[in-house]
Image (tube, rainbow, N blue to C red; front, side, top):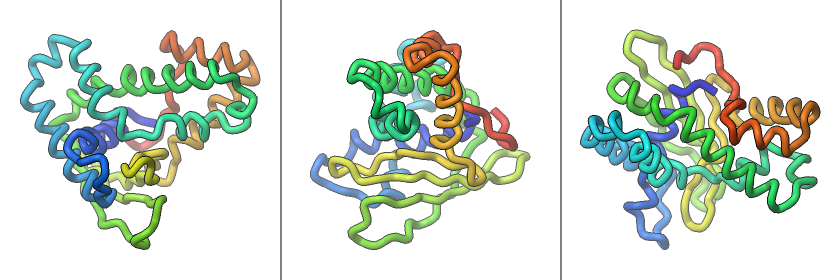
Length: 211
């Protein structure tokens, strides 16, 4: 999945947890819009600091963006049958490695594209009691065609969290699951986790989205 699409994911789901009361459940599309504004503001206000201090920037990404993703559920979807066979330690290591990979792979793009990427959001069409929805949007880029995006979200602990992203109908989870399955066959689950931890394995690329 291209970095630029994850930039939108990061901007979209950044800080809603920090501004919403735990017992309040905001609509998923409202959550996206409000969080977008907060994270964009943080980057504008601290751009020079983040450029000079990568550690501080990565800490912001982890604090503001990572909580918007349902990482345990994503890890389970990606590993599929390998999840059932994995030990508790392997599951925990994979989740941690995947989280760090997201930060390592995409954080810098948040700074790079902060002014040239915008998202246009569509209202969610779902039943009032729905617990699983897709928020649709369009990625708007300067001098380039728009790109349709979809964010699969589910209600978890009274918060809407992302568990998959689609770009032009290509699923992050499905693409990475295929990649991981092939790698596990070659080197085993421990070998795959070690490669992710070293930074030797990244999420797959998506054609048509520069980044």
